[in-house]
Length: 351
Image (cartoon, rainbow, N blue to C red; front, side):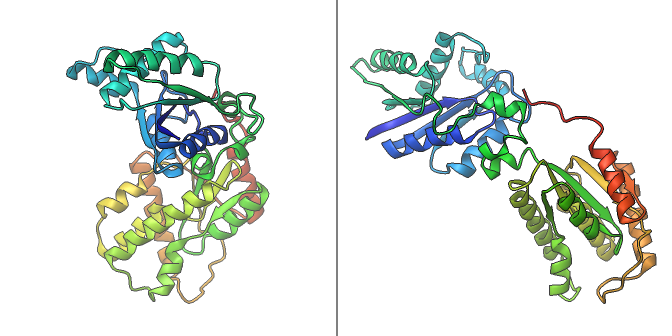
């Protein structure tokens, strides 16, 4: 049992091989610190996301995730070392991490966990560094975990080159950040659910139903301000759960803009939190025309209200310069229009 183990990596993205490594450290150490820095940042794997992935998957570890801008700001406190480039020599990386551990008062590190050849030299460097700083012998052991990649035969670079094809090597909270979210908005009875369902079937993926409609029915159409905020929170949670299980695309049968529209219709103003949520970008926003047969199921208003909704959404999207496509016609025609939007340009590699 080690006192304090450390794991260092870019985690770009954090994959199941990294998880094996961190779990090995947790199993053998009283406490674990995970350090992540990356210069330059790799697409889709910025420091904010890496911090979130670690917190969600390993809430008990001490996760130290840094962006280069943070390290530059440390100069005002006397910090002198720049963040090393990803291709910098091992000695630069070791020096940076050792100083980082010392500045963070993590003086009791006695184990380094890695799956790489650099691990042994890194442990020796930390041992010499802490022995010198503490003026007493301070052993640091290297623990090598699955160096041959037998348990998890994958690398972060391979995943970056084909993140959707290799998504099975990513846990749901990580892959959720790479799924392309397609948001469908439109007036009442504009065919959102039918299109979302058909698109999910066509692409063998997930779709997210409209929580607001369920809540509206549950509350008999009598919603207060807190109900709208509850709808937004629940809808986002449903999206996050579904995105982690998606296959490239996640089709959303609504978006925060729809909730904002209903709130505005009821109260005559734009709630700041709802507005902020409505401005959250999606990979694609699809505005559905009101050319579907209107179905009155007892909870909907009328065709005039549905038309006003369409105009309100279109004006909002244009006013806030949110890219969107207007989709109409039969279900078959709509499927073809969406497919044309998704197909022409291949998604760029994350490499």
